[in-house]
Amino acid sequence: MSEDDNAEECPTEIHSYLAAFDKSLASVDEMLKTMMSVSRSQLLQKLDPLEQAKMDLVSVYTLNSMFWGKIRSYMNKVKEITDKKKASKLNKGAASRFVRNALWEPDAENEHTSKTPAKGKKRK
Image (cartoon, rainbow, N blue to C red; front, side, top):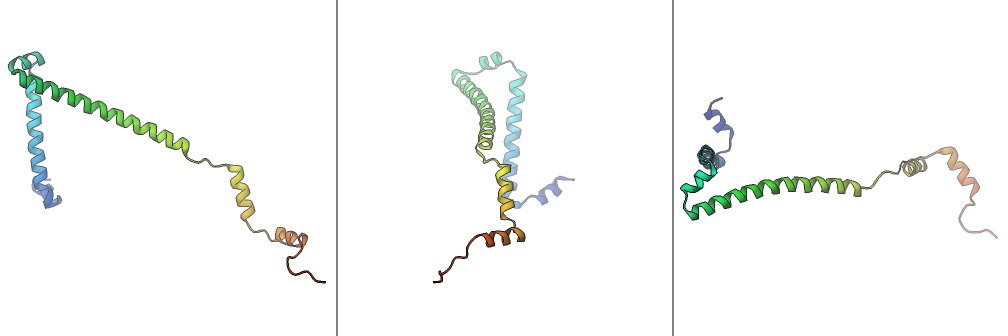
């Protein structure tokens, strides 16, 4: 498939967003290649103190974001386990009695009605 085929599949409203995202991604990729080609100490020596502080903050922010993602996934797992424990459990014995009593049995109904007196006005 060519780029023109992919462009036709996307709604026209998001073309500008995709182009901007692609440009930003290329910029980040270029920065990472530059940073990875030089050791951290060499990179920091080339920067002034303000740029060094910015570099440190970006590094800490990135690490924090990665840890938060892991922590959030573990929190979700714990929540799922907690929700499963809170969910009601099926009592098989009670369920079978409920179903058995809810089913209509003609013989049992005739026996039941013959044993109980009819409710109505008493005759004198």
